[in-house]
Length: 122
Image 1 (tube, helix red, strand yellow):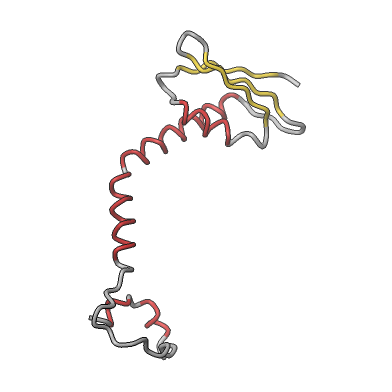
Image 2: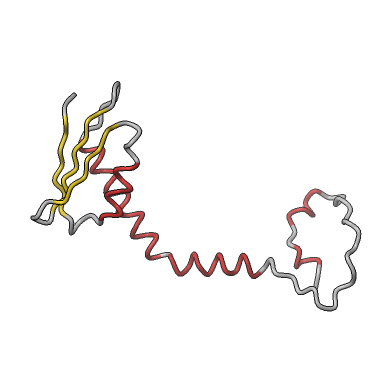
């Protein structure tokens, strides 16, 4: 079994991105990650039986993970707002509401299922 080693600039790829990339290949190869004293990540791997991993595939996955990381960072606030809005819309003010009613009957029109709760309850 041949061992492949890549040297990667630490300024291009964060530790988190490197670990996510390495993890995506753990089913196919045995990996070893090291930092050298010169600002590089050293990534070595040996393929498991019946598998081949070219350095180019690892590098492509690094780029993909770096882009995902950047997108997560840039969209964090929007995702928080969407999540907050989703949870806020599920809060129903029960003050002054009548006692628990019997379960609603199934709608006659299947399209009624697609209507939001707030559309029929003011």
